Image 1 (cartoon, rainbow, N blue to C red):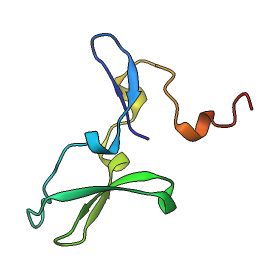
Image 2 (image 1 turned 135 degrees about the vertical axis):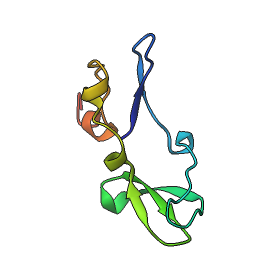
Image 3 (image 1 turned 30 degrees about the vertical axis):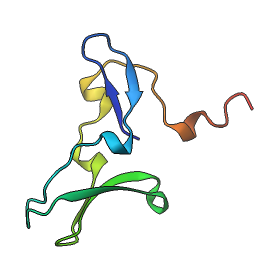
Image 4 (image 1 turned 30 degrees about the horizontal axis):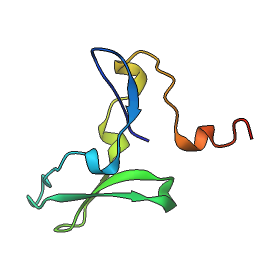
Length: 84
């Protein structure tokens, strides 16, 4: 799960796959594609079609709690079993 917070009003939301920025590979300069691999716990990965390197997005981002106040945003799988 990737989340975002408005620094002005502090509202939070999930980031969609289509909203992630386009990046170039630092090794071969090819543009990276973004994929969400279900077999890897639904993590987002940047993948290079040129040199076949890949980076898990979560390993590139700081932890949510290090930068933003608590907002109550949860992963979809965390709320599926609630109330049912």
